Length: 209
Image (cartoon, rainbow, N blue to C red; front, side, top):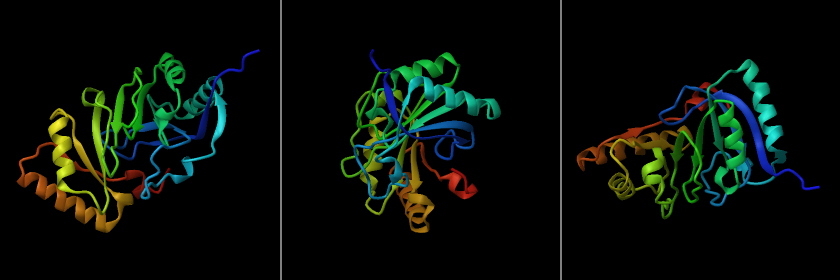
């Protein structure tokens, strides 16, 4: 007998969305294991490896259990890099339960999925992203590392619709990164770039997952 397909999961938990335009909204998170980039500044390195194999049925069961005491409309697939795994069947099952689906991705991979909200976060050094995201992404998030330069922001602003914000997110809410984010914002304004915003990690301020 064929075994049902499984996904490698790091954790499933309720919280608020701490980043981006959906910041502050109640959200159930499904964190998938594995990543194809492994950035040195990553704050979820524990999701790079390991994880437990769960069937789609088991994941949905866990989500339903959370939903009973945390009735969120939103569910976020994150990682690691969630699109390393085939999440199509999971999303289909969750959409049947009327969840709105957000995917947080480094944008190096693209799958044609019925997702409500793509948050893409291209990473150094090349800041590569799949071209489909030009019309799919709701927001572009840049981690303000020590190496981030204005030219990266200019290039992304040129290639994404003006309605899609470029979010400058300080690295792990560190003071030096906030200061650099402000500097980059000022430089962006002087160059006439529009819809560039500074973001934060709200969940870290509140001390929650």
